[in-house]
Length: 354
Image 1 (tube, rainbow, N blue to C red):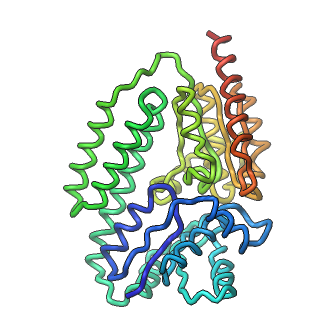
Image 2 (image 1 turned 90 degrees about the vertical axis):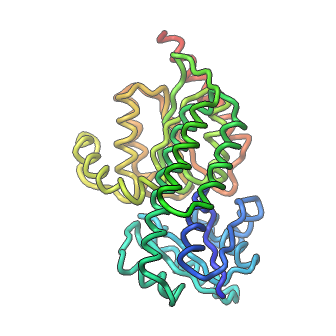
Image 3 (image 1 turned 180 degrees about the vertical axis):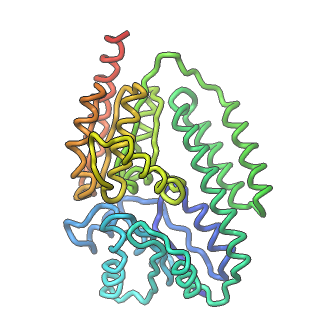
């Protein structure tokens, strides 16, 4: 029996584990939360100037191997990271790890036929009908997770933080035990109602901040030093667009919309999520958000290239924007200091306008 593992990415490990535990006969090694040890491993065995997501996932994969995994699953992005799995595979070979590494998505594109053949290598006795059945449940699970997360971001800054987090943990645990789409939907509706029952005290005039940028740094809280948690401490409504639902199901449609509605800023599609981020920055400006935070990993070329464009968008709509880069040497104290200064500034602007 093979032992499957995959890099840690926020709470999405619940959905990934659910899928592979039902469509394969393998043991699933749950990835450990990213820690300082994860980063140290990634730094030690990665090229110095490679992007931070590479280092984080490299460290996460090595930790999983040390926990017994022999079959690794990687999901590439729509930039250079989409090709990095080959380099990670070579590094693991050089370290004499006897493991197999499979990439499910290359350069941000999912080919169903290729995906099926890849999973067939992992599970030769794959039942196609059973796989489709549980894939559909997993897709719905991810959509429900993202919907609840959107509600949490909008309201967690105005209620008891621990109440939101503990209820979310219960929901994810319940989702992981679901049997079918009907029971999953009932669970979602149950927890949606429970979240809305949590007491919040949101004033009519409150700060609203939008977060845009590179997908991994946005979605993995440890890689951005729990930026959303820090913002919530200042009673801020948070808007974040990047999630798995967007990446898998709505990105293509949004790109067409972005090109149509941001002609004054870009004439053609940009790589990775750069086009989407320009569109979202304009959206945040039009909808009178108090500030924009653009986050990325160090050496993320697509996001570096659009920084002048984002600055122009912010100037055109008179909305402050803060650029933050994260790597393994980023200081947590420095991050918190910048967040506090940014919040103070947008609060002063808002009070002055009022």
